[in-house]
Length: 84
Image (cartoon, rainbow, N blue to C red; front, side):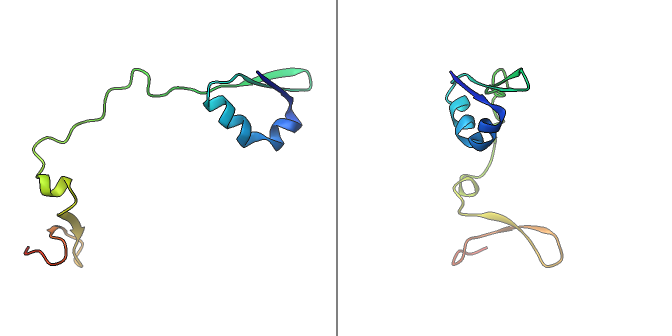
């Protein structure tokens, strides 16, 4: 466990964030009040990312892309050297 004064915690803030990220217990104190820095796991219980269904494999591999035309319309474009 890391225990520091608030002034020392301010000087070592990024080191303390690293320690908290590793799961270490980090505490500091200011004017007699103790604080604890902990990691919050926001992904716990979150649904898995949505899968792309029915996408062209060429698009997923980066061979084809979407781009905006000069008029602002979204167009499907081939990589350089490929027929459109």
